[in-house]
Length: 168
Image 1 (cartoon, rainbow, N blue to C red):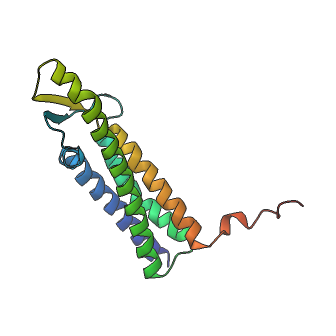
Image 2: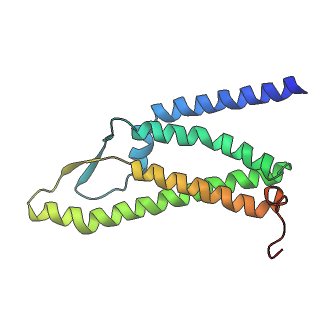
């Protein structure tokens, strides 16, 4: 049994490494797709922080998702394929909702503040450098929210069983 478990672990780690590499290489294209279309503004994806580059955070977050799912399945005792698929869908939907929320915030900010500012200066086509680090933070919040929802829906409170009931 130990060898089978070891092989599963190696496959998951290999899968996470592949996700990390693909996410790192597709970082600019991914966020170029999610940046809002604002008339007169063309976004240029940059990474401002030299230590914690956004592409590394993004790739690390996406590589962490399979490990987080595996931990959820084991700790939440989620064994059926249907429940596992449902947990994946919930987490992806929460991450997508978080990205959409950030997308809407950026679009509203640029339409209300940045575009009028450049129009007053007489500039109609502007290349605007943007670091999408907040998108990654929102994705992380979506991941955590999805994990919490899945944990609550699993109905398994295995971690809290060792504590005495409240009021004793």
